Length: 115
Length: 109
Image (cartoon, each protein chain N blue to C red):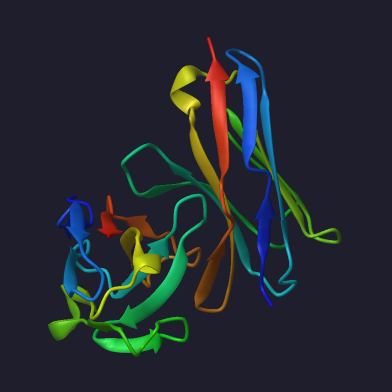
C-alpha cells in the first residue's frame, strides 16, 4: 500500500512570501492531520480533518495559515504571509477510523526555511 | 493543560538494553504510543498500550505503564545500530494526540 505523499520536500522562501504544501493520504483514510515540527520539538497539531470536515483547528494561526481538504482526499496547507518563526517541518498524517488505537501514518514532511 | 515530557538524549552500547522514559499529564488518556523517527522521514508507530494495561511486550520492545504516576517507558532489548533514531512518546484521549519532544537514541558500536 502506498504511504502518505507530501510535496515539495523542501522549500526556502523569504519572510512575507506565501507558500503551499500538498498532501495525499493513504487511500481510504478518513482522517488527515497537519502537524508543525519545529527543530528539537515534537509534532504539534495544526489541523485535523475527518473526510472534508474540520475536527480541530484550535492551534492553527488562522490569521496566516489556512488548510483545505477538497472531496475528502488530498489536502493543501497554505501560509500567507510567512514569518521567520514558521521555519519547521510540516508533517501530514492520515488514519483510518477502523482501528481503535488510531495509528497515524506520517508522510516524510516538507522542510520550510523562512529567511 | 496536556503535556508530555521526555529526556532529550540517550546513549547506549550495541547489545545493551535501552530504556526511554516519558511522563504525561492527561489522566483521561486512552492510548499511549511510542513512535520512531529516522532522519529525513516521518514518524512511524512502534507500539502502543491501552490505558488499562500495565505492560506490553512485542519482540525486543517492552512497554511499561504506571498510570498512578503517569509514567510510560520503552525498553529495547539487544539494541542495534539500526535502532538509532528519535523516539516520541504520545498520549491520546478523544480525538487529539499529544507528542513529546522526542528522545534521541545514539547506539555506539
